[in-house]
Amino acid sequence: MNSMAHLKLMQKDYRKSLRFFDQIPQEYRSRDDVATNLAMTYYMLGKLDKAKLLPYILSQLIGASIAGSLLLVVINSDLSSYESLNNIVRGDSTSYRSAVMFGEFFPNFDWIAIFD
Image (cartoon, rainbow, N blue to C red; front, side, top):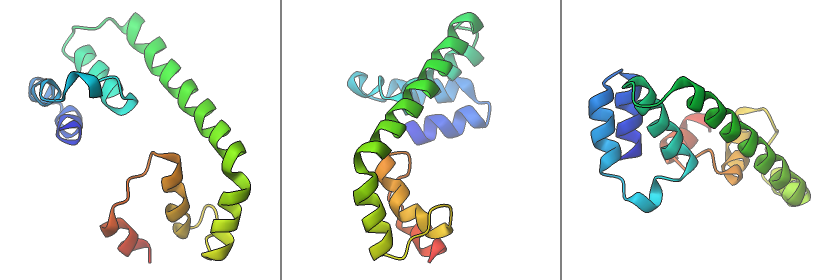
């Protein structure tokens, strides 16, 4: 549902976007990807003040950056070993395979086929 809600948000069909968000169970709405898209939808519909939206998005970005940095510190040696064993070069198209460890990339096998 989040993907459809996000798509409708990008297509500027905010009311349909909100309908898709309404179908997402309440316990999943606090996930950063869902919550940020939902906040943007409310803002575009005029139901969320800009003064609240900007600090919210900024805090999401800062939190994600801190979490990603800490994760890299914790798993860097294992990640480097994994990349060496699988001939993955960071920044190269092959690095998609190790980037999934950070949670922002989904294991989409169609994309993996494109990068191979």
